Length: 360
Image 1 (cartoon, rainbow, N blue to C red):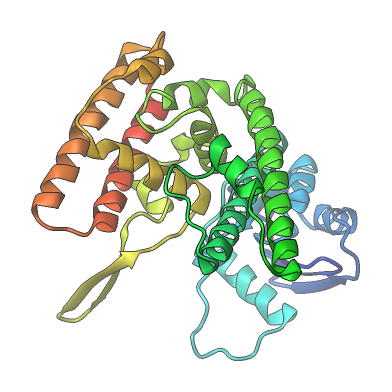
Image 2 (cartoon, helix red, strand yellow):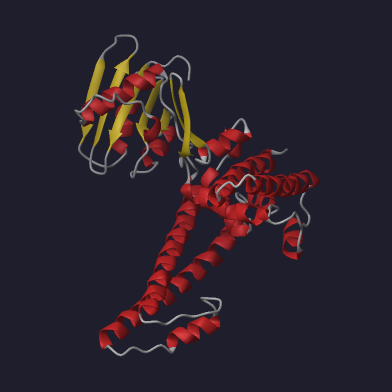
């Protein structure tokens, strides 16, 4: 926004907000503390400053309520990525006042990076998708506890696990000591409960994917090998707007799939991937990339998912199969570790997905 008259920054907490503003004309610095978690007094104070007003606060557990209220009041508000906020390495004194002043100076200097704020509908769907992810993780841990308890007592199932037959076998297990029996029954009941919760969330998310706001992006992403409806929905919800990335490699960087780098003088070393951005979308892409270790092929299920899609999307999906299989094969020939191969393919898969999502 050109012609900014007042710059403002806020340090937002659950029960209080500390704010500071700078008047461009007079150079006057004003500070204000709000001993409440409500956004209305903060927005009213900002609206009373000489306009136009540009303000910001760091993203955190308080969410985007203040941002949405500020935008509704006609303010130019930004939510800042805390991980990209420059901070002096030698500064050991931290307070709301110092944090707000630092944020204000950096906002005026253009040194801050804003996050993409989702719509209220998208944020609600993202909450549901992340709840499903948390249930999936809990279920996996619960299953591990059951299998390790059985292993300690010499009980090993030598066929496919967590099938109907395996569940019947688990239900038939008995133990000599009552306390072990109770521990096993408790874990098994928890596993059954989590399985039921996950099924309910899967059904609900399958319906959410058909929402007109999400389906135009979910549908083309389903054309890729290893990505079905729920996976495509998670990627759509986490990225939210693919067009905010000018190039495909920027999406891979945002997802944290690029190597970290330490360069100083003559020393230049690459490290592990940065793991920034959405860990949920990153996991989906890494798991999907395993499917590209097999030769390119369009099976019955993938053919059904691709049916009716535009030709340019199908061409991108087919090129992805050919390219990623070649990357898998060449890196295996070079004796690269399996996880390195998988992450490299996940990074390139993110680029193909960007191409499909942004194609006209």
